[in-house]
Image (cartoon, one colour):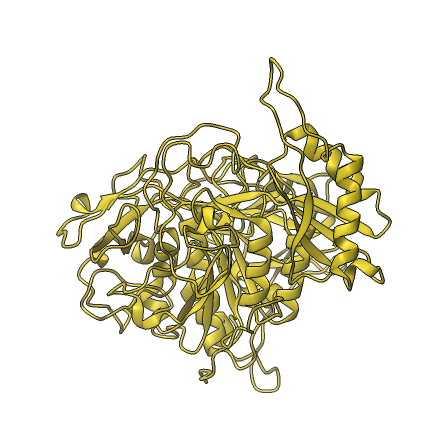
Length: 622
């Protein structure tokens, strides 16, 4: 039943993680190293790189000389061809020119570079003049992004430090890994980790890594000797000296920072080698992870990230060889530093990757804000993941909102010393060394790879790979309830990832009414445990089930969120809007159905969108 060929995958620009601790041979969690949540350097807009989409049929799509003529004209009209003398408020600025740096993978897009960084007023004027060209469809700044640092089962791994991996095993807050491993271990699936790369030689990961590509086109970011892209995707460090990024990647001063090895930590959660008697375990430990390096010192340019998405999925990127092992899953534990809607360039790249068969999993973000206002969760066709802690509740930093599909352990170590997410990384402070150790981090960066691994584990055992919508619906319909009440104002999806439940549902043959007594397909409710974050459009229908006792008053309630839902309930049959035992169809989301003398057995509850709705909770009480 398992596939044997490597398939296509997708992963995730700002690192969505970081709180940490390390120690190669620790005996207790307290001795493992950790690193606090990284708020990152101030938001940067690059200042000298722009992305332009040319209209279909324009000469600029075929002729680089036409592109550069148009850019030269725009720069001249914007006044960039004239030097600016020093004033009391600003330093002297030389004249600036603009040229096309390269074409991108997403159709019609090109990267434009100016000869010096532009200030905000100059950039705005240059963009306005580029848009005046009838051949230009869109212009955006090539922004910098950063990581979002982050029966008893038969199989129990012998890795000595798995005691610290509550995120795999904890009954309330873990993802039910041990039971899931009896069904799937991710064999035959490739997960691309679009991130800082993966450090070569990790003794607890190296056998599960296949080469990818370093997509970074600025040597200040990559710390390599040239601006060229290179094969491999290896993480050579993303350290920064004090104020290294100031003036080109950010306008703000900043402190020095050691290398994060963020991509290696993310990749470890996906596929750390397991049952090898060494360090930690990974979830999909028979899958392969592929590094697509898009982040380095100061972050990463959006244009490099967009190309990385397409390349990971097996698409064509100008100047690069095709990916010989396209990924079925792409993890993106990165995003915007400040509120930013999804750039059209990203959406085009995502849509192309989805068309190639990849599923993209993204971190919701660490800003304690609405995920729909930040890249990558503001993009369509991705699975957005919020972060929960060891108590099973929303972490203090996790972004929230209707755009978050489900949550997974991201860690809340500031509130609990046991709340770190551990994986093995390099101990070098700048470039890699020969020393390795487990490191504890927290962030939505750490939550996202749990879901990416779950996607790989499902795709490994199903006969026909699921589409991204089928996968999202599977994962959100099989979640476990949150360990604490999630306020209606800060929803983080349908619940906590339960990999075993997803695998059981994915591998259970459909009921055959010719030989079986087939009941409705429904998500079970637990007494007095709310299912939160329900979201849907007008006319949408979701069915739940509840095992009732006889004689005790049974109540179903919806509450919170926005929009309008209706509630229909039937005993031993799926209710409809015309056939039901009880209903509540008041305006808004406060619906109540009370059954004073229930029968023992199964009640089915259908939540129907009378209009679009978001952030609604459903609970059964008896």
